Length: 178
Length: 284
Image (cartoon, rainbow over all chains, first blue to last red; front, side, top):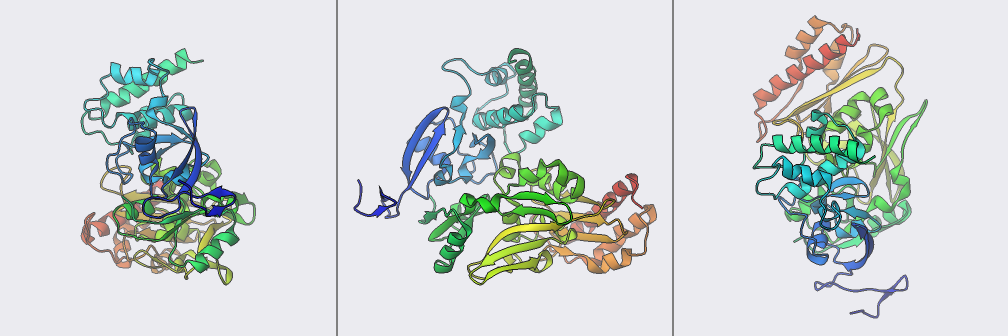
């Protein structure tokens, strides 16, 4: 699937609608990928449709609800508002990368312990925002926890169990991961 | 599904300006937090998207004594919200940056993008107004510099000509004893557009500057109010006076977020709150 057109020595692939694809290299949960993507594809679509990582959810698709939150180059972002092409060179962490094999991370264990989910749709995004918070602050107070998840909507729990779970996970991580 | 467009990511400013010259309808992509929403809703259809994040010169966030603070076009809002020097010298900007949308959006959104969108309620506009920020622009005709006040020309309209790009914003140096404060009113705490945004700055020379957003077609400086504040000390009496006086200087509209009357009241209340907070800190 390569036309004769050459640019910088590489062959260019085209999308079904005739656009030149963009070549990107990136890392997801420790695995390296090289892809040629449709320039109109979002990073969320790349994760869901190309890599078959279905943990990251699409809620509003407009950066309001936070269900699609991932960690990109160490920062929590809404993957629905990032083009796949923009992920060139990026290191990405999704909810699938939190645990190790079948062993859940401390954060995930505490979400279960505190019943911090009901329907579960917001949970992957909520976990990524919480992970990003604990990466930058090992001992956040409740206001800091609330601020960290202000971009993540949950319509089931009323947030209290989520805040409890993050507080408890922070404590366990301080004690167990030294 | 987004409409068809080609994605271009230049590595130098010259390349970017050249591309804009030959493709004048190109949309510039920095953080993308507004652009992606418009594309998704098909409110905006474009053939070319120019990602400026590959241009290293634009990523500069730098303070130089005597000159001031320079913020490049791709500097993210969270970089401003997490910077302790900015907190100390340009507090209103720091507060406004921290109050913008959600943590995830602040990790993508840029200060320059917020300004270029020229929303009447742009959170970061009122601090820039009170710091007399200068907008650095580059285009086919070369470089030019605009006062932030002249940059906003209407609802969602800015003073950029075809093919021009904002490269950064300079906030001139502030002297010791200069203080500023930002507050916004929104329907819910965090992650909401401002119903009213206000910044007040008191210089070491006791000059007062007031900038506001979401109360007129563009963010504005309240020049007449500033004149009236000129010979007044900051005290409780002035704060009470400000609460009533401020509404004579605004031209708000009623919209989905608030009525005109509410905006008058909120502006007065926020103005008074800021002044009282400053008095508590010892500002006279």
